[in-house]
Length: 191
Image (cartoon, rainbow, N blue to C red; front, side, top):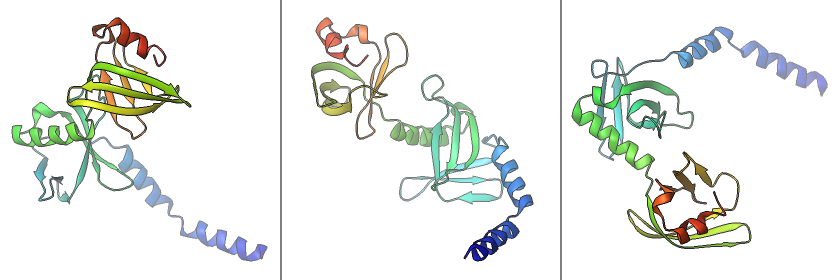
């Protein structure tokens, strides 16, 4: 049996293509800028985004912010829409694209980074390692649950926080000082 395993390992080594791996690595490391001259974005019938870049058409692409908090409309990463999400290229500034294409990409970003702002805290209860929030957001009244501790509440600045719930949704408090003293006391356990 050991001889069989060794032969299998030898076959795997023989099939390893070093040149192919080097080419793939170089391709991954190359930074490509997508501009209105070399890239064309279109909406698909299903509401997704299609990209034609140079001679290649990608039927669906993912749109990601590289710096979602500090530069939300700059350095936008365009990736293949599969499990590998290989980066195709980067848009330096959305404003440098055709306005209609920039609007379409902005819509995709708004969907991916949907983050309602919490404007009022009605109640926060803690029980069995979880925090149960009842809040008012810019999109209406909401209830959600977070893990106590860990990375559920992230301080972006001294007054700005983001709260991540159990389902992966994000909520933002842009300025905790605009909340009432009673509301801030409720948040104290998590900040």
